[in-house]
Figure 1 (cartoon, one colour):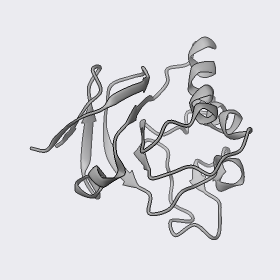
Figure 2 (cartoon, one colour; figure 1 turned 180 degrees about the horizontal axis):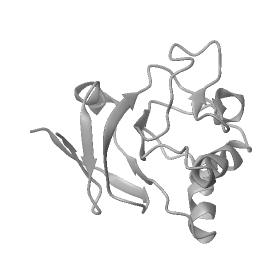
Figure 3 (cartoon, helix red, strand yellow; figure 1 turned 90 degrees about the horizontal axis):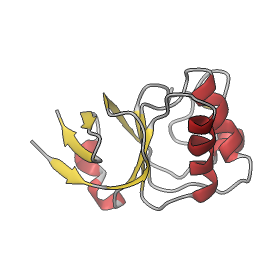
Figure 4 (cartoon, rainbow, N blue to C red; figure 1 turned 30 degrees about the horizontal axis):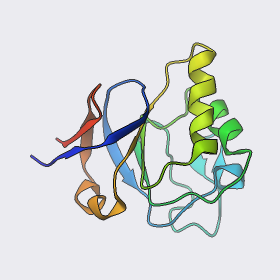
Length: 137
């Protein structure tokens, strides 16, 4: 079993879910539909795929000050990823999770893991425990 120690960026719910490893960076503002939880950017290689309920592995984000609002909408609508694994912390995106927690929503955990570690996660079911340990199931 592959196990990866991560750095916790935002504490959230432990999870067991399918990994969705994105092949390109994404902007949540305009790139993810907050009403469907699907990738809306027609230029993104994974256009149309749902991020809801998945362990979303982000090789990078394309900045927008509205990313936090989109992620907050996803959390409040029950359409958020089960967890988020980021190559690099994105303070604006993570703010959406922090605000969701402050509003009393159950929020996905966000952790940092080098994108070179993403390949073994493709098409796998992942468990992320309260300490941020990612295990391939």
